[in-house]
Image (cartoon, rainbow, N blue to C red; front, side, top):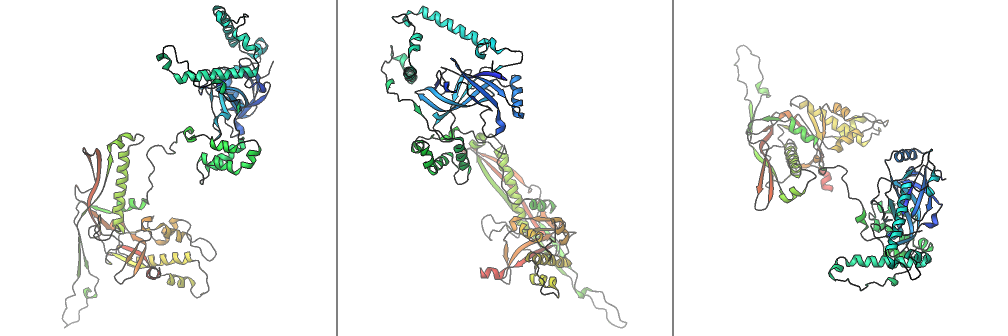
Length: 633
């Protein structure tokens, strides 16, 4: 009596497997009485997958296993699954295989696994590719019969060697059937009244292996002929392969598990990337060691698995659905488009009367003197008319039909809408960057950029690094301040001093490059402490409502009328002072059209609008003079 948690067939003999192999009797005879690990689903990556052990018993029908679970959490879980009938299949992992033709006559079972289901109602061999090693070296054999549970009340001695009663009865039926067939077919008898089975039993193991090879070759020849035998009336009796020319028992090359791990890790590296390349590199680097162990490295390299990538599982999307779009900063775009003032007319006119002259002041009267009229006010008048801005795209209808994992038309539309909004926002803040007269240029007289606008509307202020440094040092000229601290203070000085002349509505927002924000956040005092811990602290110091970073501003420069080069650092503006005008029908409109001649869907997003600042000194453009840097460069 063998004490165990359950038992079952690890493999059965003489079954043709899916790949044409046949496990012959006593192929694993050398492991009779051996104990191997019981594993979950052939997973060797973690010790947690080891569920217990299995005692192997070689029988006439195959290899029987008596299995015992360990006391680990995974072992107890697997035990419950088996007891409840949730898992009913076993599978072996074997290597060091020897074959004659399609017949497996020797091998070593390395572990026995519980699996969810076998691939066939009987047994099958699923070759395990060891990342470039020949396929014959390893195999997995799944057996799909229900495993047998032992309970404390059961008596295993009532069954022959632990064999289930149903299997025993089935075997007796088969034996009785064979006896009847032998009686019916006298041709199976020899001259000495011996059956084929009697003769077979008199053969040595070497003779039986040779016979196996002959039978396998004959079966293979018949499979190759296929239906041609039907057409040849009597069959094609020409043997294309001499069964006696089959090579002797062949033993495949074997790589250890440690070798496999090294090869996989090498394949995962960015410099290699391919499993086949990793195998070749590993074999070359370890040629001397592997050849010393008996491996023919050149044979492995020449006969490695071709197109092993075909055996890998399909790639799966980390984020199912449409591809993730990589875009530039869009948060500031939303702020510009949502906060700008909108009018239902597209032809914009602004008129301002300058009443600041001293000549307009009221005067005191002196008796007997003449009362003089005051001076004239200056009238400022500006008009802005609209321009059409559009984005156009097309898709072949075949592509629309073939792409089934997401709605490609909606995906394209979303991208077009985002690009249209971004282009308008860029034109409003800094201009679209195209040279005058270029194809697709958004005319700056139709959508007037804040950065390049007239001084009447936008104040252009340079930061003064030397002034900031002098103010920080005071009388202590030896004080050592960090460059970031001086830069941050220069920006804040320029921003706050310019605000003294700011005439815009309410509190402005600050639109700048991400780098500028980082410079100020990294500013430290003389004790090494950060001046501003958060962006909110920085916004408070700048006296602005919000700070919006725009990577689109990075590196932008402009040439002034006095031939100086100014680099944009940021823009202070309340977008309520910028008006976007568009008449009914000029708002953003989507057009679809099908081109029957070219089988294409064409898409157009279009708007017609104008834009301009409408208040005196309502924006501040913070700049840095880089004229000397440009000349030096």
